[in-house]
Length: 87
Image (cartoon, rainbow, N blue to C red; front, side, top):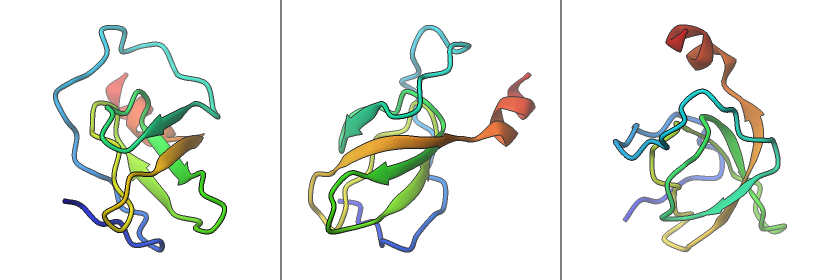
């Protein structure tokens, strides 16, 4: 079980389950829950109003849990450096 500290902003490891279309950027504001595969590399913010965790997650990685609990995450910004490296 992975625990995310609310001040942690490090990148999580990349998984192997990438979507078939790797060139399409997902829109800001999309949401995913803990345990689902991340559709877009970027900064993801927890949508719970009592916590303000923001973490970097790479496309294909599993969305993290927060203090052992399932959380909903919203994409708030893109990671342009990894997009530049991929092109």
